[in-house]
Image (cartoon, rainbow, N blue to C red; front, side):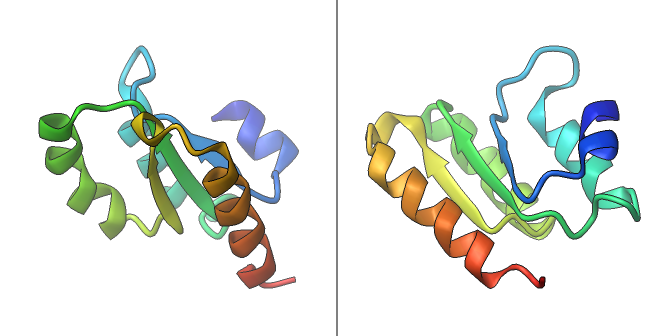
Length: 91
């Protein structure tokens, strides 16, 4: 979180399976901070179906721009979603 605040990236690609609190807590902190709340977030995760369904609505309610499962193995989709999000983000 400290690095996101410092660097203020154009986009965040976030895995929900992070240690110490997980990606959902990181997403909540990003959205709660006025300095980072408008940064587009793409969730890219290896969660299994049961876990995925549990978090999907929570994550979407926090305003992610895309939710991609690593299980799809489609790197091109990640690139397309990042480009789409960057093109849609306010300048």
